[in-house]
Image (tube, rainbow, N blue to C red; front, top):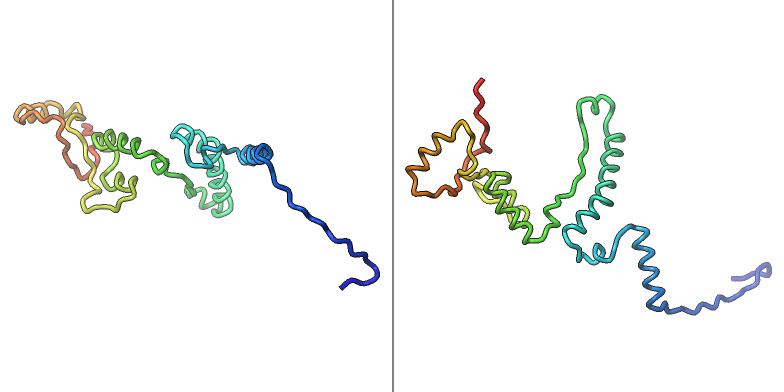
Length: 175
C-alpha cells in the first residue's frame, strides 16, 4: 500500500560473485580480527601451535572469566574463606595419540597418574582397581634403600618390575 506522500523506487539488486583474491583477503581479515590462523581453524595444528594459541588466546579469556565470576558470585566474606572458581582446559585432550602414549610410559613408572586417569585421556571408561597408583622399584627413598637392596639381591633381577600401592609413597621422616 503506497499513498501519495511517497514515491516507490524499486531496488535493483544484482548479486556480485567475489573472486578468489578478494575472498582470501576477507578470510585473512576475519582471521586477524579473531587472532586465529588457518591451521587452528581447520584443526591441522601441531602441539606447539596449539600450545601457543591456548596460552595467547584461550588462557587469558579463561582468566578473565574466573575473575568476573569470582567478583559477581561470591561475597567478600566468601572470598575471605578462599572460595574461587577455576576454569581450565585439559591440555591432554588436545595431544596426539603418540604424545599421550609417550606420556603414559613416563607417568606410570613414577606414579604420577593412575590407570583410570590414563584411560580417561583416551576416552575409555574406568576399570575396577584402576585408582591404584603404581611406581617402579627404581625410585626408592634413601632411608629404605638398604632394605630394598637386600630384597633385590634375593629377586631374579627384575629391578624394573612395577608394584602397585594403594597411595603414592610418602617419605618416612624421623621426628
